[in-house]
Image (cartoon, rainbow, N blue to C red; front, top):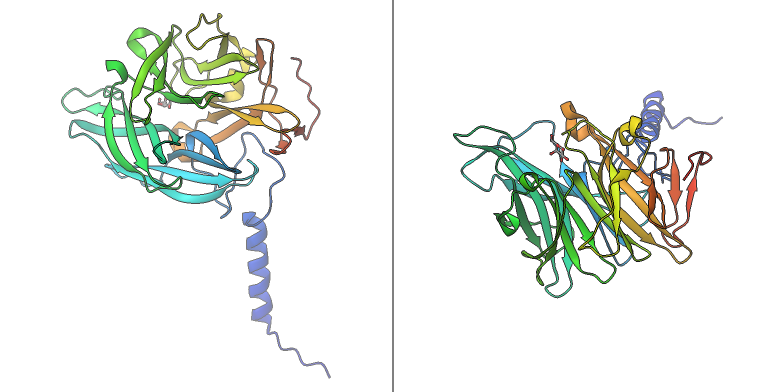
Amino acid sequence: MIKFTFSISHIAKVLILLSLIGLSGYAQKKTSIKPGELWPDNNGNHINAHGGGIIKLKDTYYWYGEEHRKLKDPHYRYVSCYTSKDLMNWTSQGTVLSMKEPDTILRNWVLERPKVFYNKKTNKFVMYMHVDGEIVGQGGDYLYAQVGIAVSDHATGPFTFIKCFRPFGHISRDIGQFIDDDGTAYLIFEDRPSKGFHIARLSGDYMNVEEDVCLIKSPLEGGAIVNYQGLYYAIGSALTGWVPNPNKYATATSLKGPWTEFKDIAPPETNTYNSQSTLLLKVIGDKQTTVVFLADQWKKEAVGDSRYLWMPVHIGDGRLWLPEPRPWSINVRTGDVKFLKKDIVKK
Ligand code: GAL
């Protein structure tokens, strides 16, 4: 006679474990990017890296972003990092910067849109961030308006805060990052009084801004730039806070300009499919180059639950268009993109 060595409780435990694994999506390899949906990391947690920036080192992508925690500490703010080799599956590297307010005059402060640059000469990772908040005695919520810098010897941190400053003395709110094809690194920063955003070349060690290359005179934030086939495309959103608006783009043959008029990147009534620009990522494959629009779909009441809208754009000959979001996949080696549903959007 067969002897049952498993008790009912053993079997129940195994079943519970199997269903938990299934529910969390843990260890399930993703084969697509689903814009606007929850995006589980390797542990099954929604990726918490908002207003982010991405760099690629060897064959690994590093995604840095605002890490929002449910329990808000009055003093500390955090930056997270995730790594991936295919842009679809992301491994949490945890918190890479844990920072206390950098100034005694700051209250209710925010650390937004962190962007990391790797400096080959110094072998350092230099993080730029938007540091803002109330100023004691003056109130207001975005009055501090400075850029912060933190540094690490490793891509996955820990980063150490170094300083805050106003680039070339200007008020600085949303920041963006742009690394040109020749490796030159630029900080993009929004300057409210000048009604535009600056493109600032970084110094040799990336610890400062060195040249105010251009002030694009258009009241836009969430600035992002890509160099595609020798033409620069700049994207930005209108100044409506967490509320989405029609993001726009302009082009120029030189970063110094002149820049064309700004035009819609998507049907304006969709408010950029409820998203706000943060980065244009160029994936250079051996078959084709794909430019991906990276944006946040903000949830003001629970910023950590905000979603990501990543979509490859139609780009070329001075035109840029964001197709209607739908699941897609990318082969980072070839640069090829596949849509899970037919591409119905006209260029
Ligand atoms: C947006 C900005 C975000 C955040 C938000 C706060 O315009 O892009 O990074 O600052 O405003 O209202």
